[in-house]
Length: 137
Image 1 (tube, rainbow, N blue to C red):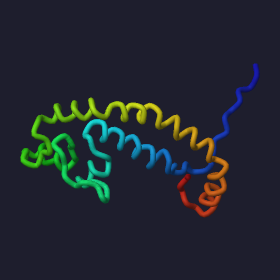
Image 2 (cartoon, rainbow, N blue to C red; image 1 turned 90 degrees about the vertical axis):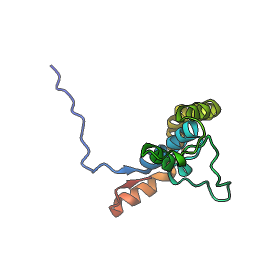
Image 3 (spheres, one colour; image 1 turned 30 degrees about the vertical axis):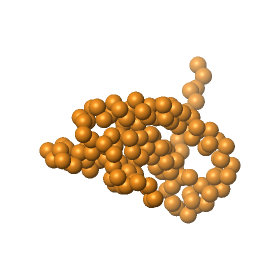
Image 4 (cartoon, rainbow, N blue to C red; image 1 turned 120 degrees about the horizontal axis):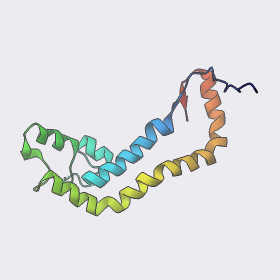
């Protein structure tokens, strides 16, 4: 019987991939908060609109501080005149057409971009590895 071939193990430590660890979750998180709560990820977390935008929160937009306030029992700071479920349903009905393609196509699009840009990123990754930084671009 033939001897089984063993897969060679890498001796290098696994490095943190910026695309998979930071950018992808932000893109998907932004799509989800836009779809469910009607605001961008930044506005959801900070309760502020981007620079130059209208900072007034409309009744359908839900932010994290409003959610935490409503969980603590302070419904005066909750951003909607209706129930939470009605606001989420309204936001989903309005934003699902933008949210679903991002959720299903973000990973394949990032994979394609990684393949196209890999010759440009390879020297940078080699330099980062040589310098001892455990990050991969």
